[in-house]
Image (cartoon, rainbow, N blue to C red):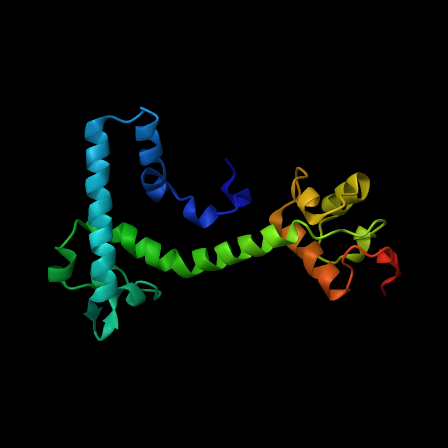
Length: 185
């Protein structure tokens, strides 16, 4: 899988694969009861560590906020806090908090993209007028002539960034499916 093309790529990390997939694998009969019990214990510890990070202050600031700062890591925490759960669990929690803002922003962008999929692309749009599109993208779109951003997004080789560029350009030029797409200066 190419995670750069995935909608929720910030959630698709190798260190959280078991958190995303073990329950599904167990339900499909692919994971033993013993392995699943270990997974449930890990999830309990993760929940406990997250709660500690949110509710416990270090130097007057919640640990969850400190984890978001560059240069702050589990190694900066006092030993009595670190000893509450295994270090490997703290490492996962730290990564989750570091990515939290980015993941939230990505989820917001995904919702915007989902709303844009219905946005019409004017018939006869000259893709050469849209700055920021790669020449291969322009050629492919001109050849296939999608009628909506959703159709454009499903074309092989067209990236979410390409779709966003087209959507922004259409909005800036007040072209939401009008017939005069090529008359804009």
